[in-house]
Image 1 (cartoon, one colour):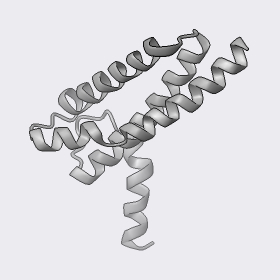
Image 2: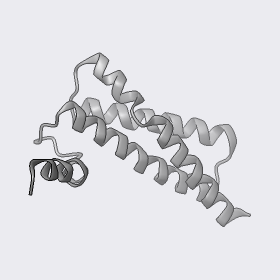
Image 3: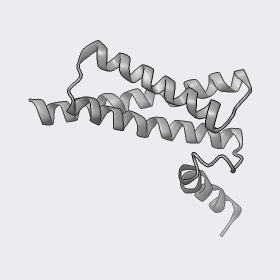
Image 4: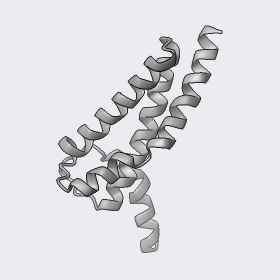
Length: 116
């Protein structure tokens, strides 16, 4: 097993398993990977939930943006305890648009399945 294989395993498996473990110190790159993938998961979960409720229009988009921002802010401030304001802004932007796309796809799919 080469060193790149162990890095790749840590990047995908280890990071997601230990995303909320405060005892493990992550590099900045690992933190951005965590934030990116956690946002994707959050986008899908919120899309499924909002599609089943059903929420429509501005309320669903606004709720998604607020929930996504609050989750990300809580994650890097309370769990990871990131102090650097420039890095916080980078994390705040990381994976946002792809998370929004995942939200829209899952929201439309579940809304159509349950309500149309």
